[in-house]
Image 1: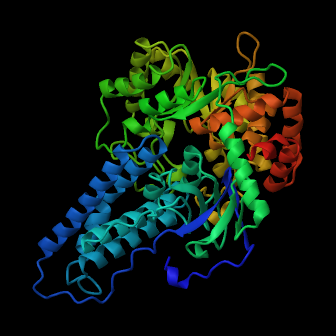
Image 2: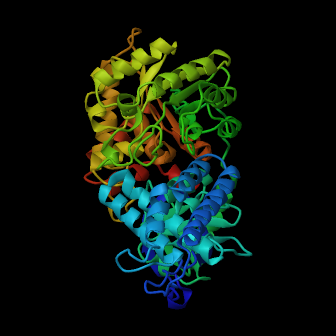
Length: 581
């Protein structure tokens, strides 16, 4: 964004978007720097130019960008590392580099291009192909364009695009943020995020929650606020006010004081009537697990095993997997650790496992389904999980992603049994699994709701698209109905003891304190979230009884829209405003 065209916001000008991470702050806006300028289409290319040398320049630039992204990935943990490693893979994508090199030749229609122009056009072609595929692959188009800009900057000898530098903490504004940028945000410098695009489950939203930064997305016009403008951001209400008055400044100060006194989670979450609802953590690595344990997490509700597989051309060995999983198990002796088997495919393609040419990857061979096309990978992973469990004291549960039918659930349970794993489960993120939860759960010991994907598939709305943010919202009554159907099915598929099969939530919905109350009221038995969300959720749940949670849940179910569902529940939970959540 070119600052010369930004118009200073008028006093009290307001912007409305989707609040994705709570908090009330006041600060000066800094806009993301203007994007890398498009190379000239008609730049002259010398007749005697050495095509091999020019092609090598593109290869070297791509490798340099990949190395820089890998270096940044090594310096962060959790979601940030996963995003950076995936983007690094994109930087060395053979399709992108080869397509660019072909455009250097003079016989190509339109004539020879400069390396900068060649990578620009090749990147656009790849991104357009991904957009046409829709779903998760459309999400990767942003990554390709980010990588393209970085390679062009490398070819020009200029710094890569990135977060602006400031001597004082600031509120970062942008149209949207590239995954590689959101992955390395410094909460010591950036106090809030506001974007004019994106959705409630975009990279920006997920990482803002993981970092504990107040954030509002899909707020049209905020990318036009001039640098230096003071604004008030309410990440719970989804509102932004330029040049705030004294009342809003006092509100931000009050929130800061409340947030500083928010009691850390003590590791035992109990409702007001004594019902225990365990609060678990979502982790990806041993380092994540150590931080989660320190934050009081009662266990792990989602161990993402993709970290062990990313940035590789071949499957990791069983020994490598044992070490990776064992590092997480070691942090939670005697406590539950729920392992999600490899969720490859769609936005996480792996060269040794998935097919990049699928016409619609979001609906293709993904998660558990990869066992159909690449048998053996899942079996070896289960053996590695069992081996790691045998040398640690964690209580290991294992679940498969993208389960759609009871037959698939039964097949997965049989694979777990063959590996020596005693507690098999399924992810409920495909609507069919929620609708037939009673039969699906008869085959396994538990279920965990992946609300990010369940919302996306139920509403047929790409979670990365700002214009669809209202649809792609876990407060949608249709999504809440699917949660209730899953819990009801779990009650019908009772265990040998006569108790319902346990249903947890490990999607982003669990990190919203208001929605956490609703989920408990719908019959969810445990909640898993980023470690940073534990304190806020644990401050709210003990203030309600199960009957109160049920009443609020049915209020949300009866609402005609996500907005009205959320408003009605928040009205019944005054503690949220007291805590600024």
